[in-house]
Length: 200
Image (cartoon, rainbow, N blue to C red; front, top):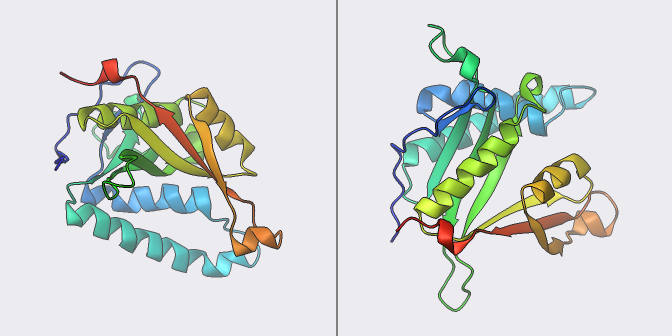
């Protein structure tokens, strides 16, 4: 079984790229804010359920971080400008990666990327791309050569990001909500990593 090192060394930052490191339990509040703001609107009637959604996200994230699962890691992107400033650095974005190892007859062992989110003030600065690259490095470290993720069919901006990163559509998934036009379909995307990139 592949063991995931929760003490992974942070990927080095550059002048334009954030520091990507494994998230820690004390990051939960900031991570929750980034995820909630990215996936749930805080306006209209939704403002009434927003606190409950935030609490649900926070508790789920705490549980995943505390579990120390050997098949999961949560990443935090920290702006380089915040490093060494003496204050708690803001978290610019996050992504989660988990090893999916189906039954032998199903094949398709892959790393599934989820909850990729970037804080509003840090968007269009390469944070999402840096997080995706970090997920690729993690997959290579785990000796897995395929990444997968879901994106909503009507989320054109996210699709453009993933296509630019080399992801291709594997399948479109209908749900009862999409059948009645209440929600867009989900697209399952995948990216094959070159075998030569695997560590020896």
